[in-house]
Image (cartoon, rainbow, N blue to C red; front, side):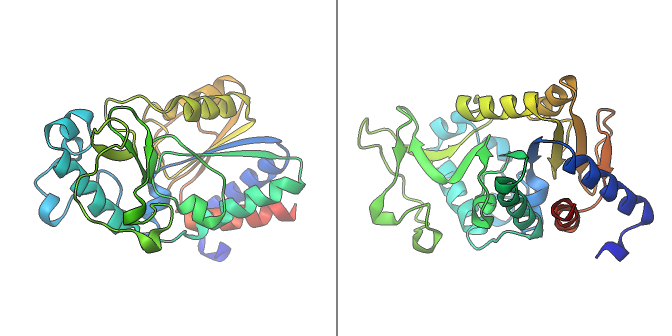
Length: 266
């Protein structure tokens, strides 16, 4: 695999590995690109079939759910079907291996994701979700977590029922919604605090498969930079960003296994 990379990119991988082995606190942010390598369409990819006439913003806002809860719920059940059979790719696996390796090394590694799938967890990682979790539900009003035993657990995808019939909260009788951060909603306080703390205190901030220009998550890279961290971006289409110190312009599934192999060998 290494031989397939350009000499310039190989040199950048070597540079990143040497930097990472000399730093203790690492913060990693992953975005849609890493999941796309597992076959999960990015949120802004064109919809297909029944959904091609809808803008994603019309299906992912509190106002849309209030206006037509059945439509929004049906779309999320469709999305769950798209994601249910997807599995971690080499980038997810490498990150999990690195996180495991840090248990016996001098490093601390905080993994943050903008993704709502559970591919990091499937690979074995501990991860903080900024935008919620596709496999969880909650009440749209009282926000109580909800799990309908008769339909199977959304934490065990082998038993999922993708029925699009609306469900109601046993506490307040309001409709159940996906536990996802929609447009116009605040990020979960605890998750964002975890992300901010990790970014502010890290020595290296790594952005994987996400634009380092899109806020609010892009603010994490800025925060890390302001506190003296080096910034590494892994993306086949790098963003024009002057705060990045090392750019690895290739898919995460190609770069991460090589990078982790070098880190654990040094």
